[in-house]
Length: 360
Image (cartoon, rainbow, N blue to C red; front, side, top):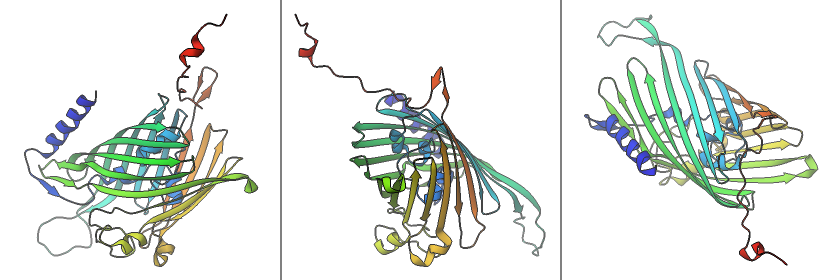
């Protein structure tokens, strides 16, 4: 099976790149980095959180190992007053130590002005309007080694993209993620975006790719009985390996690994408090530099009813564009003949041979 998957990825990469040479670009297949659901956005985090819902299938595949439920997530986002992002994810904990995840998303912008390339006098009125859309299908697999208290999780994810602009295009990306959890409450790890580099090929024959990128993160979880709940907090860096824009408020283009001060200032931090009765409060900063706090604030709230139905909302500010709003619904089926809660099978019990001997 592994050989077939590897062969399929290589064949897809060859189909995208041939017969034209690939051109290096930035922001290829960004739909895969938008983030599913609303919970993570309320904390301004993507990877540094313990998994709860099916959005982990795309956001942080290794965190699927935290989820023991057969569960769905669907979400709608209104971004910057003009973009819409709809997504659906499913997590299937089919094995005691392995988890499958699936995702489907559509990112669309309507009312885009079309202007002719001809050299003429500028006109206040566009030649027309058109819409754009990205369609993405994702699949992920996570594996846990060790116990929940001392666990090492590894995962991989593949994203396939169909793009409809003024011309059509297709793309793909494969990611990897690894994390270590100590005592069930302290976590550190890394996410490698584009382990198989992001690639896209357009109808015109133009092909482009984006080099791999890496993010580091830490997270902590602690019960606080005095307030009848538990606290989660996380920190994650921006991309460290490649040059590119990391800030929405100012120019930050150096590689994070060669400019630690800039990487620290554009890192993310957030927290979530889960009350025992189901309410969750979230807050974070997309950039922890004090000068960016007003425009990088993230807020979120959610409610989980009996681990069956949950609603999450997230708000995000922006220094120049309109605010963004996300609303997500999580559902775990619970019926007499199908119980989605605690769906994950347990490890088989190992009985010593001497205990299997008959006793007379």
